[in-house]
Each structure stands twice: as C-alpha cells, then as structure tokens.
Length: 438
Image (cartoon, rainbow, N blue to C red; front, side, top):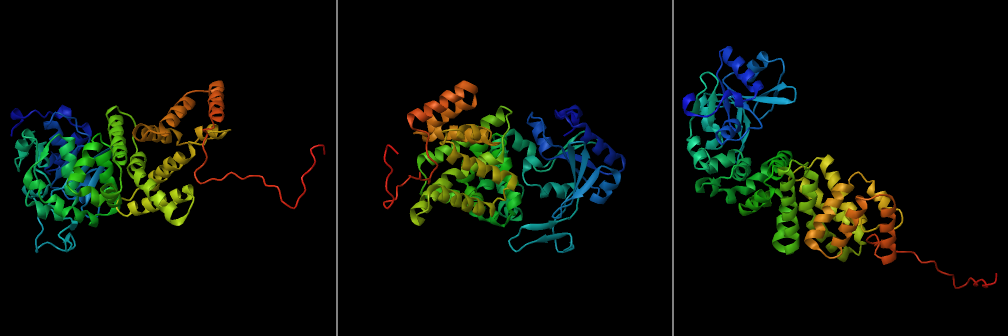
C-alpha cells in the first residue's frame, strides 16, 4: 500500500524511531516500523512504543549505535536508548526446521519455543508474528505499508485473528492467549472463533510460563484501564484459573455475592483512576483481589486451630501470598505494601487515645483508607460509618480531630484489636483488702 493510500505520516512517529530506521537504511539494511505502533496509528491512536524490525543482526545493530545494549536469551533484541525513551529493534525471525542449529533454536516437548534466535526474511518474520493486526510493516525506504496477513482488513472489521494454526501457535507461546484477551478489550475488538475456540482447553499451558513473566502480563491486563473487562474475559476463557488458581476455586465454591462484587468494584475503581490519569499500583489491585480469600481462610483457620483472629489473619495472609507467588511472582516492593494495606484494616477500628493520630502518620494510610472505603461501599455494616469517620479525621486537624476522638470514646465504639483481651486487675483471695479509711 503506497504512501498515497494510507494515513500514516512521519510526523506521527517518534523522532528517535525515525533516526534509528534512517541510519539502518543508510547502512544498507532494511528497516520497518512494525507491530503495535503501526496498528495503533491505523486505528487513529497514538502509540506508546515504536518497535522496529530489520535484517541486521543484533551485533550489527550494536555497532551502529553507541547507546545500544543487547538483551534477551530466548530471542536477542537490541534496545537503543534516547534518554528515557527506548526503541526496541528486532532482527527478522525465520522458521524453525531441522537444518537450524540447536544452539539458536529449540522447542520443548510441549512445542513451546525456549530458544528463538533464528533469523529470516520479512515474509518469514510476518508469518512468525502472533496476530494479523500486528503483521503490518511501515517501510522507511518509501513510506509504504506491507500487509502480509490481511491485517488491515482485520483492523477495519475489528477482529483479533491469530496467524497460522491456533493450537500450534498457542503451544509455541501460551502467553498469546492472554494477549488475545488484552488486545480484544484494549482495541474494542472481538476474538474470531478460530482464534478463540482452543483457548479454554489450552489454558493450562500457562503453568509452564515463568511466574515473573506472568506478573508482567497481569500488570498489562489490570493496570491499563480495562481491568474489569479483562478479569471477566479471562474467567470466561478459563485463563484466570491458570493465573489465580486459589482465587478461582474460592469464587466457585465459598465466595459470597459481596466478595465477588468487592473484587469487581476494586477493578472498576482502578479503571477509573487510570482513565483519570491518577496513579495505580499492582499492590492495591493484588490486595483487593485476594482480600476476600484471605478473610475466608483466616476465619476457617481461627475456627479449626483456636487461634486468635489477628494471628489467624496473619497466617492466612502469608499462605495466600506464598501460593500466589508461585503463579505470578509479585515483587516484594508490591507484596509488602499489600500486606500493609491488609494489616491496617485490622488496626483502623482502634481509634481511642492516640492510636488514630499514630495511624494517620503511617506511610500507607491513604491506600489503606481507600481500601476501607471500598469495603464499606460493598460490604456495608459497621465498615461504612468507620470509613466515614476516617474520612473526616484524615481531612481535618486540631480541635476537629480531638472532637472526633471524644465522639468515639463517648460512643464506646472505639473497637478492640481482633483477638485482643483486656486484662482485669484481680485481687488475690489470700490478700486482705485495705480499709477504705487507710
């Protein structure tokens, strides 16, 4: 498709991406913008990333750019850094066959690609891409578009179509099933039947994907403004069970309507924050998704082991997080914040004396309050007035705070830490009481 027949202009491209493509082309290499950058421009959206493909090998790219570093073992990539902007350059991929050395390509027994440094032509590279909408190339040589898989037609008809045999492509990389869901919600498209049909039966293949990679995919799903839609679609296709197995078991057996409503409300709240350009964090979303499960397990543990509610809760929280780590490796900088949010839910009812003042200085008090507010909206009961009290306290100072503390003390609703017991001063039966006059 020549430049005169499409609407992509160089003015829409990153100057850094243009610089990389021009230099590669000037040195005699082919260079194309490909993937999400081209797709988004054709959809009238501004791309977040500009990925480039070339017939230059990674080592050749590195020689051309002093600001380049090579990354990846499964497939070598060149990252060219312009300040905070990173332009990713990949060498065109080829097909796997018996003539290729085992040193550059390898599939495991399930058909998943574990080494993929096989290089080829642009036609082969297009066949190796996942979905037709991502196999459109913008040439810097003549500004034309090269569409090898009817991707433009798929964009016009808003369809997610996988390239090649779906079962084989999902076995090569099971994460493609998650990507199909993410593209469908992100781009407001439908997954066509041939692409969708095998997903439910192959969802278990995600168990072979490293937990750290799955965490990255979860962040893309839940922190991009489409969390609620992605959650529902993942569940529909059986993918949620592969990502949050304990949560799905709980939702299918022991969860109340309020528990599921709480998770959906948290996802909806996250989407609203993203769409309003407010900050979001995996710590809050993980805390919200796993909270009903932690609470349920804590109650079960307290009943079965005769532990105090607080101790049972801490044990349940650790067990739930530890098991979840095996599926999606949550970095400590997030899991510790999730624990803080949970622990503060036990402390927020205790407002007497100077406790409220001390809690108000906790570094995670805002996140914990937002969490409490959400709980109050969904579960109601005593949580709602508690959240309203904290809202007043955190937005006031001085005398107003003092009056709020007096109000709590006067109503006798300051609350006790779960599992705590107030000690009573006892008089020894063998010790004589003092006379009132003495």
